[in-house]
Length: 85
Image (cartoon, rainbow, N blue to C red; front, side):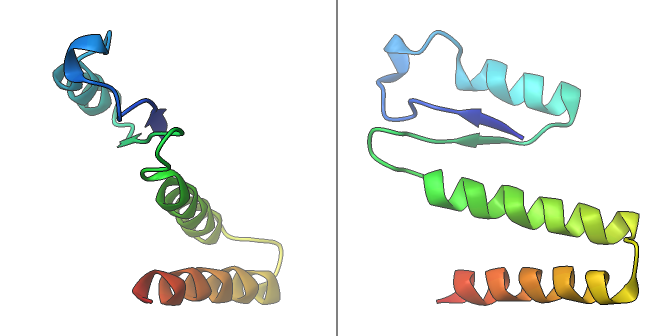
């Protein structure tokens, strides 16, 4: 996942256009999330998203025991419930 920071800046001040970022993302099959450290836009959401992706990937790869898989599944469910609030 790529974090495109400074999404709060005016379009003309950004060195790489959103079209270029979109094309790069599609070419490399890597998701991009636009964030702003200044305003906080998408900062929390991006960390939650990457955490969910890691949990899903870990579950898909398998783990050293059924109990560990269950714990990862419960962690994902807690994140999903938090998003619904």
